[in-house]
Picture 1: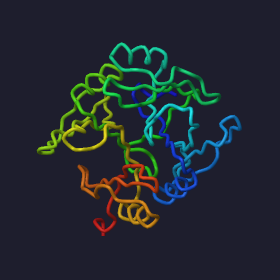
Picture 2: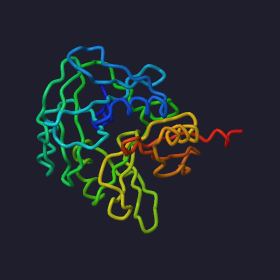
Picture 3: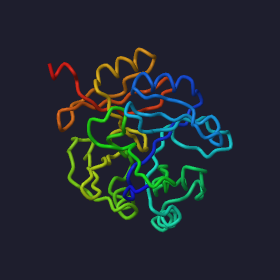
Amino acid sequence: MQNPDGTPIWFELNTADEAKARHFYAATIGWTIARSPMPEHGAYLIASAPDGAAIAGIATPPSSAPSLPDWSIYFGTADVDATVAKVMELGGSIQVEPMDIPGVGRFAIAKDPQHVSFMVMTGASPDPSSAFVQGPHHGHAVWIELAIPDPDGALAFYGALFGWTREGAMPMGPMGEYVFLGSGETRPGAVMSSATTGSPARWNWYAYVPDIDAAIATATGLGGVLLQGPDQIPGGGYSANVGDLTGTQLGIVGPRIGDAA
């Protein structure tokens, strides 16, 4: 994949209840979810946006698999093995050493120095991933967010690993700053303190929906919960976080249709 290093290129849900997850996310986000067409991928599910782009995978991990967050983010890299070496040089650790997935690419599972998990991958396809595309693209990822005890330490780590830079910040009062990440002309997301906000230390991500109130109503109507929002964000849209039927958190971003009336 020809994405710059550090670009989010894939998202993956580990769940013990695949059927509930499939129904919840298809209805809430608007994904089409189907089995991978590659038999060697077993029961792996692929979630696609309305425009046909593949966005995320859904899997039930075996009991022998390493402990991972419910939702994981895969970051693109031109060389997985070199990135793994850099992770360790910078004080991180490796949960799963680099390995190949037939027809997909080479990946590894890492932890940053503050023990937050993330994936790195070099895709087998020469085409860039479009799972993460900022703007009003229904069902695509549009924002990533890291809650972590030491945001400055995280910025130093990920900056050295992916070339991210600090590009301003939004004050949140006693909760500290919401620090925006930069990668060239791209602003993929932000970092905040998990210590002051009370958030679990983790990577979160946000999918775009065309009507955030409708998405929230669908999520809660199916038995999910509204964890945050909807809150207005710069640019006029709104963000929210919902919990699915097993309590897994996912962010959503979109307009309030009533505001446009």
